[in-house]
Each structure stands twice: as structure tokens, then as C-alpha cells.
Length: 101
Image (cartoon, rainbow, N blue to C red; front, side, top):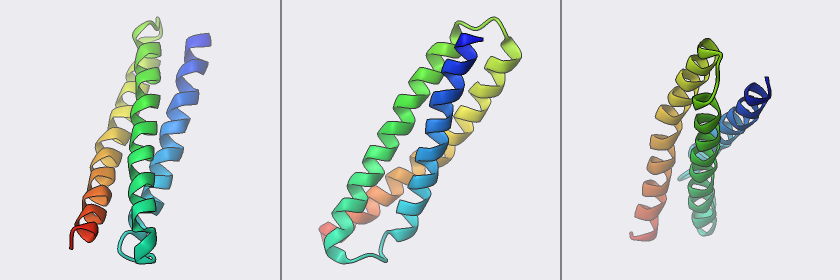
């Protein structure tokens, strides 16, 4: 049960970071040009938060006896990664292109 609690908490962090990343992505190209770098930093930090939380999820589910729970969180976490990481990379790239134009 302790491992389940230690899995749910970082997974929820992944969800919150992904939600914030969606907001950041929606603002790219719509904010004050001088704030674009702040959005880029936010995208990078949120990507790192998602990946760091994922490491915590992974380490906990690997030692778990409840395989159904582990499989559920492995699938949910991977789905979040598959959605969020490309979104973070796209936001960063778009802002980088603004800086170089």
C-alpha cells in the first residue's frame, strides 16, 4: 500500500505538469515577444518535472506485488509522456525559432 501511495503522488505531479504544459503551449506565439523566453523555460522545466516524476513512478511500480496496479500506472504514465514530451519539445522549438528570426 505504501508503494501505491508513493506511485500515485508523482503520477499526479505528472498530470499537473502536463496540464500546465498545455497552457504554456497554448500561449506560444500569443504572448508578449519579450516573454517568449519565459514560456520556453516553463516548457523545459515542465518537461523535466514530468520526466522526474515518471522516474519515481517507475521505481515504485517495479517493486510492486499488485501487478494490475503497476500495469495501470505504467500505461497511464506512458500515455502522459507520449503526449506531453512532444508538446514540450514543440513549444521549445517554436520559441527558439522566434529567438532566431
